[in-house]
Image: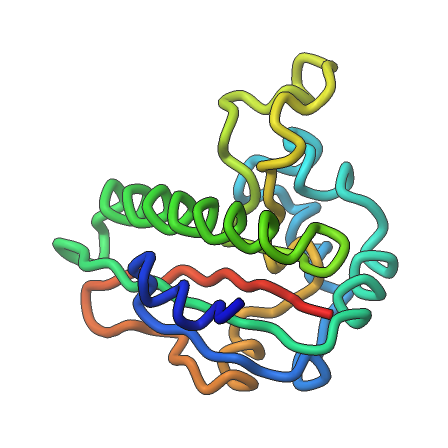
Length: 178
């Protein structure tokens, strides 16, 4: 399966393949999750602390050989266009869901880990807040950061730009492959 070609076909802005060894996961990123700036800490199955211990997540990431990293850049009216940012996040996660489905269907879940920006947002609210099992476990995606991946460092390792330009917002995702 040519994931780079699939990214182009689905409408990803940019995608590159890199060695996972070039990515340096950081356990300290869970500190930011604990600060709960996004409001999902303990309120989403794909976010800390529900997703598991950071050391185990980093070990899982390191078990893969290569990664296809993609970014989507969306135009904003201005740097305070929070509605545009939310719309871009929704579009990015929809694209990542399409990619994940095709990748998992072709390569199998045991060989691939797909991560996105901001964690799963399929169900609002997440079933965890109702203390019931995840309603969409085969579709739920975690964030790069939940697995200890610093997106700024990921950009340095992959050659992708963290910023898409003036009055834009950029979101990242990736498929980690054995």
